[in-house]
Length: 465
Image (cartoon, rainbow, N blue to C red; front, side, top):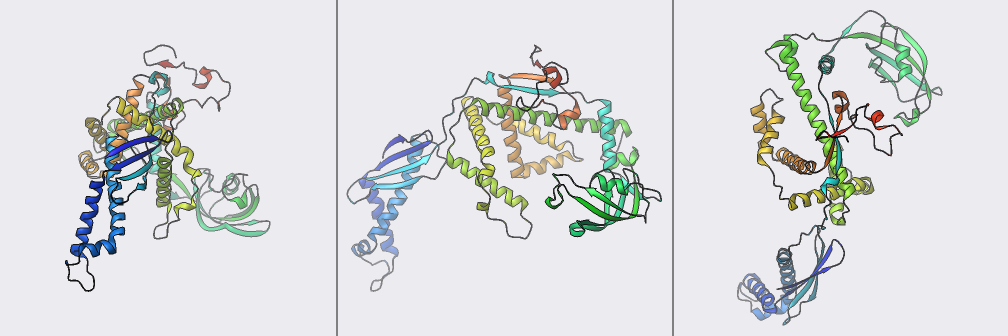
């Protein structure tokens, strides 16, 4: 077999493949013989149809089938021989397939592009760091109590933070409208469920009291009908309830999975969970920056087939996620490709760069790191060993963990060479995503000290940033 490679563009290749005539004719003859032994024709006993008759009746179809089979097999062999990595279905076209001549055909397809890696020292990221303070833990304990709050009926006027049940009817320009009325609707005053004007009008009322009032809606209200409009409401309070938080006692600790050690043990457990959450968030912030830097520093010619395939996968995933159970799903073609293209192109480009980094530096998946990650995920549960076993049995979940570990390995390799600025921050800013200053094009002309809270950034070796 002879193979020649033609570069059509940065990612397009065309192979011209020549298969010796005797090899191709042997395949044709074999197919004809198989057909002779199995075909049934009127006037002939099974297996006794003359080969000449089989060739006369079926020769063209058999030859075409043999050509297709030979081209596909030879294409796969040629790709391996030339060390190519196709990312699209090949377009196979016969050039010569006549009897007595070598079979010649072309195969056109897209390949993974060559990525020229930049010096990774050009990568610069900021890593926020913080200590978890007693005040942070106290705040978390209050949040946990809030999550377990119960509601109790009271005979007094409603105040902010109470939950009320109300019947209401709203009219827009004197007319009722869809969604403008409700019975026994629970509202937590101050939460803004129905807007500030509604909360203010109901605050101060006891159960059984009625009121009429106007409520103005913002220009960006989710309901287009109400944007920038004023609605006249009639409302009746049916019930007033106040919240009660559980005490920090043994019953509460046990409900949270801490059976011994009292408050000190519970605080230690909560602190550990907070630390894991913060470390995870820091890692994601750093990974995001590294990927953004790789995208900024590298110019990658993207194979259109690879981008299109990923766009279709995103459409399928979105429709599967939001399709109502038991109802027919939307046609993926109804979603425009452009809705996904920018993000997909960025992620495909970064994926090709990280692939090149792994190959260039022989970065293989660290099985021990996978085991540590599985145990880390499992340790926050009441029975970590059982959880770890279930993770190993869930192939899809385990694959996602392996992908994350592989990504972290690449990021760690890059960070060893990159410039990493450490930013002093707080636990709250880190977990809420406020630890890093906004991008330069979105920030004001504030000084670095004003942007990062006054602390100068320092590199990991302790020098000034």
